[in-house]
Amino acid sequence: MESFGFWASWFAWRDAMIVSLVSAAALAYLGVWVVLKRVVYVPLALAQVSSVGVVLSYLVCSWVGEDAHHIHTLFDPAWMSLLVALATGFWFAHPREDSSLAIVSAYLIGGATVLVLGGYITQELHDVQAVLFGNAVLVDTVQIFYVGGAALGVAVVHGLWHRRFLFVSFDPDAAGAAGLRPFRVEVLLYASFALMISVATRAIGALPAFGLMVLPAMSALRLARSLRGAFAWAISLGVLAAAFGYYLSFRLGFPTGASMVGLSGLGYLATLALRRR
Amino acid sequence: MEKPHEILIRLRDVSIGFGAPLLRPLSFQLARGELWGMVGPNGAGKTTFAKTLLGLIPPLAGRVELLASDLRASYTPQRHRLNPSYPLSALEVVLMGRAAYLPVGRRPRAEDRRRAEEELARLDLAPLAGQPFRSLSGGQQQRVLLARALAVDPDVLVLDEPAEGMDLLGTADTLRFLRQVNSGGRMAVLMISHHLDDVIGAVDHLCFISQHANLFEAGTAQAMASSEKLSALYGRPIETHECAGKTHVHVREA
Image 1 (spheres, rainbow over the protein chains, first blue to last red):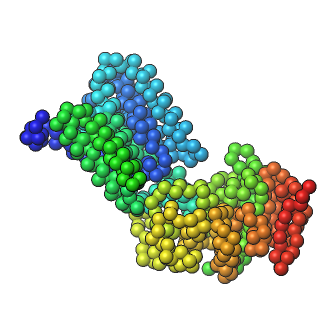
Image 2 (cartoon, rainbow over the protein chains, first blue to last red):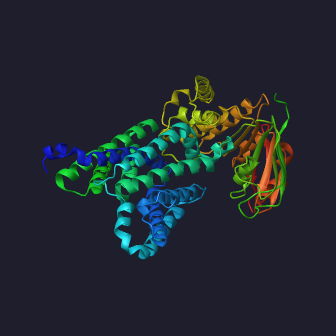
């Protein structure tokens, strides 16, 4: 497709681009925390357990005979996935010697639950797949508000609690001795991961949400000399990967999410080569 | 108002451990102005004791009483337990301690920065303030953590292996520094260490702990630094002797 076609059809991709850029910025910022805390599989596990919430929502709706898209209650797929992700984030925040066991358990149990429960909602399975793993090409306008609201919430919480997040992540024992409550601070931090992952997974898909959270942050931490620099690099790289990934997919017909993640991956490989020289 | 010898923290019949008690219930108290050393074999329960004292781990039984109002406690962990990948400068690490006492959302003020720089300077780290923490040597990192602990003007200071990663001179300087900063009697200091020789010479009080020997004993350094007590602690014959006014410890060959 020609570049003229891309700009001429801006109305078709405007919403998707806005959602992708906002998601990328927020995910990449949070990714710095995830990489520093050495819990890079947390977003993957949260995306997986979010899908349990969506399936549960459809299951409840099929039992009561209503269309899940039209239920604006606790059983709405968006709320259900967020609630399950928040509950899992709460579980992850508990202090452990090895957090990877909890993360792997959540991922596996979440995956198995979706497969088992998915068998009961075969008729709506196509809808469920769309809700579960999103589509960065076709985005409802309402997703701009979901993603924008979640990103704003993350920005406010991190703006207020940044120094506590930092102290508790870097040295939880010293933070606890200084009177902070490390568990409560960790719950808030993991809740921000859960909120953004749950919303972004539904908006742009599981693969781009995971990729945009981890890869730009990994690159940023190789390039930056300060924490502030790492956040700035991560957000810039995430936004660039989302924008150019979308453009490439439009021009060359690549899958959109894969293009975004592929560019982020190339960026990481470039930083590996740069720092080695 | 700080009162000399004011008891700050008291442990009454406390069982320490995770799930199961490590040793029999113990009682202990920490008063302002005291400088304590804690020694014991590897896996004796030293860090678990320190964390229980600071309220980081709940006791399995008994009571931990904080007897001073607005008690400020600082803890420097074993350096290897920290994640070295954080891109933070030495000054940012020290400021972390100050930031813990600020209201949510408040940035450190000029006063916080001044106190952090002051502590870095006291530990001869002023030229390294802007250096990445992860690029510093083990001994320098340990001193940065000590500066962070002191920058909050604590009432209670607990140091877990403060000489870890330090050479002979670094260890001697750090121990001398600790005596010096506490000479005004403002703080209570508990120092966990494997450097038995150095600790015995630096502290006023000693505390022995051993899970294997089910032993917890505390007293003045002079009373505790005996061959009998040290042999009971380590389960091997240990001798002490005085040389140039210092107590030295060595393991007797079988």
